[in-house]
Length: 217
Ligand SMILES: N[C@@H](CCC(=O)N[C@@H](CS)C(=O)NCC(=O)O)C(=O)O
Image (cartoon, rainbow, N blue to C red):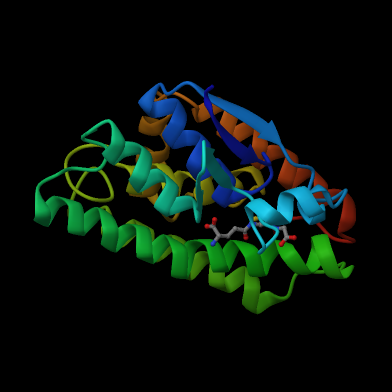
């Protein structure tokens, strides 16, 4: 029986796990969980993840939550260079993954969640500014190397792509961030890019419908 990823395409963390699966070419069954219909709150699902979130990776009796941990596990399980075994290279990947978890995703979440979950109709200026500050930080990482954790694509790029694709779908301009724009365009060659962008677009369309102002201005 193949392993299962409980997934929702709108969810940036869920797309981190999916991008990893696609780039590793793994045979994993993708089960869609509609978090807007509350499918993450069923008794059955809560047994898998009491935090009622996607993504969750399940392989037999092995249950793994947290998108970036899933990415590390999957890449390690097949000894992929997407998560290098060299300690220093791997630590740089970890560093970027922690940055992604504590900076990129929170900025995106704070931008989107009040609209999706709390009926907010306008995104505050400080949340819009936080997006630019984040993209500026990402731009600075790319001054040192072609990819976020060195000279080759790693799961750090896949994690960051999930958030960046969401901002792109929201219409955020990349004119001030040429290295990031170039990196984003180079990512197009990798498996799962379009699928990830489509999920990001569904998120952006949903936000647009709920807002009383342009999504990005
Ligand atoms: N730190 C978690 C975050 C996962 C997360 O926030 N998932 C959200 C979607 S973006 C979710 O499932 N929300 C549904 C809920 O909380 O009920 C990860 O990286 O996997």
